[in-house]
Length: 276
Length: 333
Ligand SMILES: Nc1ncnc2c1ncn2[C@@H]1O[C@H](COP(=O)(O)OP(=O)(O)OP(=O)(O)O)[C@@H](O)[C@H]1O
Ligand SMILES: [Mg+2]
Image: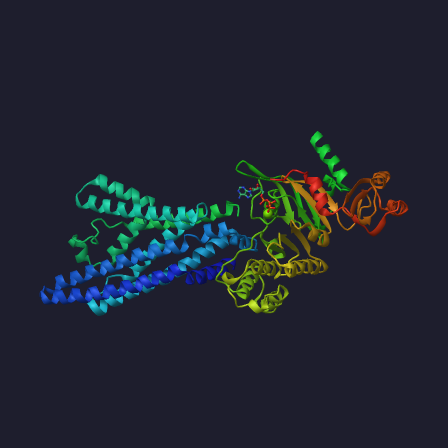
């Protein structure tokens, strides 16, 4: 019960944060840009009278670019909205009036987590819906497995959210932001190293990439999402940055889910141990 | 051991004190609102509370006094489960202080009340009521009543970000009372309040006591403590150094402030047969005696020695004097 009240208040709070509306605004601006881009791309393609299947591939690649941008927006928005929820409330003392109510600490933390999860879900759904709609009506392309893609991006955001919560129980808002963005950046670079390693047949590079994915599995979830949403033909082309020379395995996804759950338990534990 | 008896001596000098004996801690646990045994909290190397043992009876308005940094807020936080004690035990309303359910019967006004600035006053109270487990139907009637009590009815739809410090303090007080708690912790409730607000806090405390609630009050405004509290303890460096029942007037020591003219130095010197100290400051004569029973003698002596008395007011040793005496004259911190 207490967790649900906290989830509700957190959801409402997120809705009143400038950062969320900035993200929504950025998202809308992006969709407009994306639609315009696709429109002109289509015009140029038609002028060059390319064969239909190449045309389709180009549009599909554009669509992947769109999803990639959405993924980035969603991750950054998740971090920026949730980064001070724990550290900020502990620093200001707001948490004292809550933690002395008859609800346990795990309920407070889980409630907040659920509140943000709800907000992120709404954002990811809206942005995925937007990109898919634009892609279909302007570009005439539909992604494969949009739902799995959206769910995977949502999972990626939850992972980022949970890591932000873990750090939020111990570090200041600023430190927390730097750590989580840093970890995501590490995963991002690692992902590219892995891709290059796979393309150049360099197993050591792949290992470096895999290790970075183990430290922070966000980028590999995105690559899996992207993999899911492409047609098998695009997958086999391996020419775009989104072609996923080495798509993360299902085991990697399992690892990400376990990672998330463990992180959530750790966050709860650290929060329970803390003096407020 | 020598340090302990020294402190006892100091306490005697300062007035009549009841020191808590270990036996007292053990009597009738059910009748106690708060009981702590050798409670201790260390932050890193900093000892915030060294060895706190105290009892608060149910229905008591209890004053918790001590200089800045004495560990008052930390003690309250341990009693509320916000801070984990390094060692020792704490019980509130008969159960260990880390119990979750007992908090439905406890109200708390933190030292520096802050809350989500985007909530309006009535939303804040509703949220706190719900977190406290109150049904919506009850809240519908309690929220306006509480807003009225703390004088914020006109601001019920105002957001907290537009509140002044005193208004925040008032809404914090309302939040602590919304669920009619049995035990209320108020950490410096009058800080930032105007004179009406201070009066309000006093009245609220009185109403809570009449209702049978226990109030644990932490304040530096000793004149208020003097009016509102039944009993006070003084803590220093996280340890109880003295305790005093304010409802029983000790006859032990009494100060007198008089306004008089034509007082000669010999007359003042002659006061020493009754008084422990006497000081003339313009027309203002301040003296202390060991007992109220000698006051008529002093008055007769003064008039007989030819001085004109315009005012002669016996005062018991103020809490502030007592505080300074107990804490020593050093500037604190
Ligand atoms: N979280 C913390 N970390 C480290 N030290 C702390 C912490 N909280 C309190 N302290 C230290 O513990 C001591 C007691 O602090 P506390 O806030 O309990 O004092 P207080 O009696 O309430 O003082 P005041 O009258 O100024 O409110 C202080 O020296 C303070 O610096
Ligand atoms: Mg304090």
